[in-house]
Image 1 (cartoon, rainbow, N blue to C red):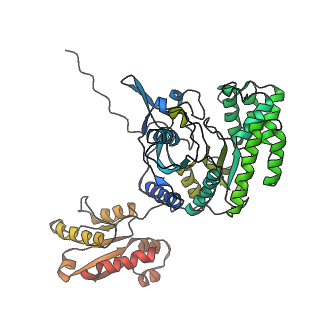
Image 2 (image 1 turned 135 degrees about the horizontal axis):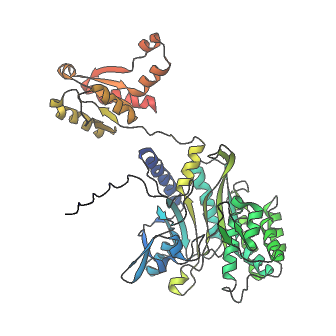
Image 3 (image 1 turned 180 degrees about the horizontal axis):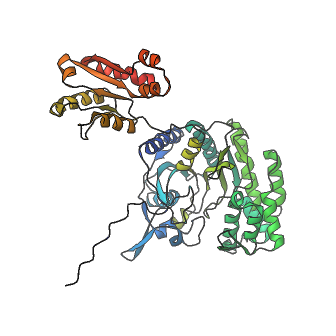
Length: 496
């Protein structure tokens, strides 16, 4: 009889392109989402939660780096239909706006937060699952809605801990770029689908300016580009003259918004759609100025195009301007943490009727990484108070202690490991970053007292104090049992 082959043990490893998040990281994200939601709510937006799964048909062909959705999403076939994990929160909103259009107010203002998934090549800091935090207005054609989104984005960055001077919200308009491409001969207003493939490549090329530089973008506007790994990316196939017109658009930024708008108006001369886009930028600038949002917070910048194909008008991006050190020790600007724009045709896919919409998405994990890089986040979250176990027979008493602490708003737990070695209990408390430990054995119970050890102060004394200082600064206190909560609160307050 053949020997049954033993099944190998599964590998305990995270799938490629994904990662796990532990206590402090989860707490940091939760706190940030709460702050962002507070700003969105203050601006009058309502919360919406949609399914993580959509039909591929509903998602559409709008991924930033691919032409077909099944190239960039996690998809599977079910009952003769293709389903996929959402790759952003905007496409699901378009479906909701169409599905519930008779029940929702118009304009409909909503915010949404949650994970999205991209089936793309992972890299350093680039994961296949990440959190987004969106706010959108559906049903408002006025560019006042776009200006409001930019103002809200500026306010949000400051609320989460990015001060003025460390960020800029940059604004452009796809209509201006379409006007430039019309002048360059790759956009036909009478047949918008003509040259669509070439324009998509142009958009993605411009969006990679920071990463690829001028030469890299120029190569993608032409025949294509081979990266360091040898992979070839097909270009838009523009002639040298056409490429120069597009490159001139990218170099149109001037010292003031007024001068930039004047230069853009020159570049789109003869294009109606381009002229409309310039006029919209002027209106946005006026509205933001009236709201007190100066050009050092929000500025017009032609280099902003956004890679997604569904944008139809104003587009915006929040960039952090301070320097950080990369993995090779080189200084670099942190870069973009948020982006968005107007997408008047997205809901139309479902209804056949144009429904104006505009919105923004914040990359929460990117924003957290920025705050961490600037030292504006606590790298270690405070753990719970640990009630140690000196006598297994008194477990009910220890549980009564921890219940009293929790009922008084103090995070606490009873040590549930093997209590035989008391030193291991304190090591456990250190590993949990516990602020304090409660100690009570037979003598303490008989005397109606408890010992409370200040673990943070104790660690500081052990590191820095002389023997005499250590004696003068005790880190362990004996208090009556009925004063346990008060003493612990005193210790916790001194540590905050």
